[in-house]
Length: 196
Image (cartoon, rainbow, N blue to C red; front, top):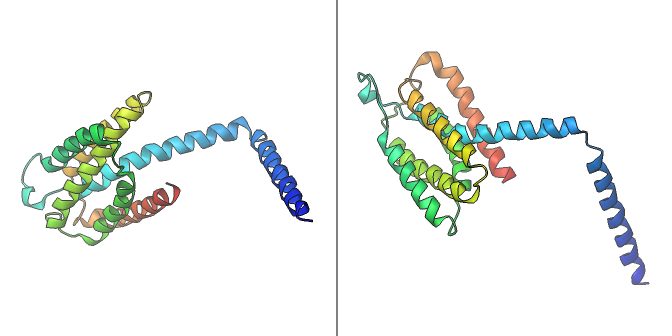
């Protein structure tokens, strides 16, 4: 009597596993390639979004007259994070902090009206270090994809510098696109947290 439920459960499990296997083999090659391209696009976008959000926050209204401005504190922390991530990657990971950071940056873009706020300076110190740490740990683990991390880090740094020199927060022309982008950042952060 006790063997019968176990037998039924085993047969059902085998039937489900075999049907999953059959379904996996029926996925067309086009669908597989479309999925991989979409995933790659989302993966690249997720790497660049923090640099875009932080670049918008980086503009200093106190340095408005300067021809070129840059938040050096961000790059110092990014470099220190790279070094620490390279050597201390076994101890802990900060990828979840960077994903939650997208939500935080999106909220800041909506709420902050003055980018010279002390909270903004702390944001650059925190997320410069955590982004650098994640890149540093990736450099060691993914030798085959080293080019990808160098490319996204380089592209993100260039985007950050360009946006650092454009006043977006406080400019009425950019207010609606900024609000849309802020909501996009928040939703992206939530999705990344849920799928990780």
